[in-house]
Length: 177
Image 1: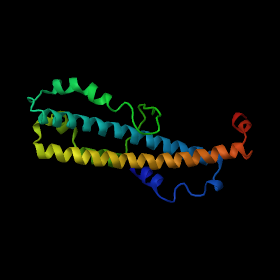
Image 2: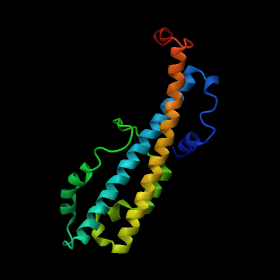
Image 3: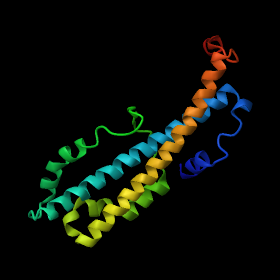
Image 4: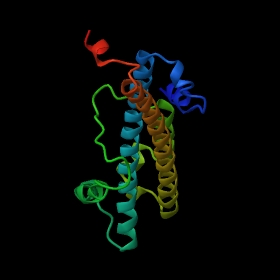
């Protein structure tokens, strides 16, 4: 999927929409949506790791005792609830078993904050914890920027499809026949 993401984010994509058939436009839109769904899932994973690191940093700043993993997990619902609304398109992304996270981005996330280190953030020293938080934040912005670019392409493809129906170049009857 990394290659698909690179292709979809290439400045020349999607090219001349007017020269594309309706089937091509729909296929391109579906591909963009599928890749965006994978990026959305990846972004949620990054945010979860950021929340865990943030909780550990807050605990240290408050001078609290090191907690076992169950104590940290008990705090996660409140930390994750902070992310239930915010900027964005306000749409619920459907996630199913077929969602693919771009492998190169998943590997990059593991290099920044391996699941094993996030499972026990108390084992990280303060400097490492700070570095992980900064790198996760930068990575989350990078993934969000890629999602925004994909939304632009999805919107352009959708606008062309709508335009064709509105201008009579495409017919709903053709879909039903």
